[in-house]
Length: 257
Length: 131
Image 1 (cartoon, rainbow over the protein chains, first blue to last red):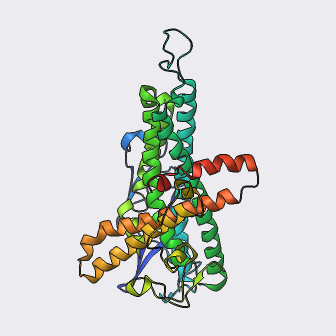
Image 2: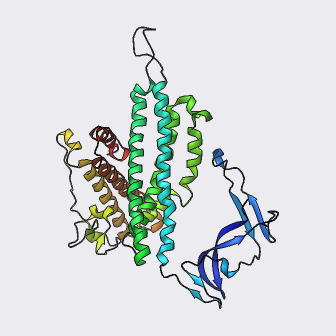
């Protein structure tokens, strides 16, 4: 159990808001782990489709909790003893780091699709059904993957998985360049491009890969719906990626900018 | 430098007042400055796999999506009615980026046997197979 939380909260000094900042906040007693006064802690409960079942997602409510000034993460912007706010010299750095997760999501979702494809392609290679031979009992039944209706569903998805993997590598490389420029110069020529591409790729990759994973499940027939296929688990854990960090429609609108 | 420097406005850009008219477009959107092929002939059909035709087609789809959005903005269409147009523009541009990244990756593969297999997948990746 965590005794401390990283809390993003609005910073207000003398009634003037300075926007969200990050604070380290003690939430539980370090001796008996009970919640500290005026702090309500709980678990949000089960998630849809059984996804993220092994991960505890909690909630916390603060009621008039005082956070000492020193608990604010002050690498960039700072609050001095007298309450004077000092702006970050490199304000774009904090924005740049927000893109980190989007870049990671594109990569993670393309790998999820490759995992589902591996299962589906292996299964349809082993699974045999019906025989193209006119003589009954003339030999083994045909491998399911040799049917064009299966090939045409799975192989384009394999191409798409590679496309997103390569695109995520390209995006990562742009992102690394951008962060290096921000660190050294405090500005980057890549910021707008990385913002647009990470928004668009995050939206499209999560949308396409999740649809692809579902197609893999269907290609495995009834066995694909069994929890033992492993595809359901991949889908359930990938499903929230369409909404966390922003939905498809929100992000593609970002790309337009 | 990967950015496409803009010396002269391209054929489409004078209409795009909402595209930031900075000194350059980022590398991934550089195709917007190139002169647009208003008609793309595919003859014979085998040509589809040559001369980057698939890429040109995707770029043209993206250009036209942006052009259509710009025209609707200039016609005074309320912003809330343009959401799906924005989605179309975003999707079209991401398709260009996706396929370009794939194509560049295929070209960078040294192993001939691996490249041959991946290259087959390149032509059936959904953005291209939809074209």
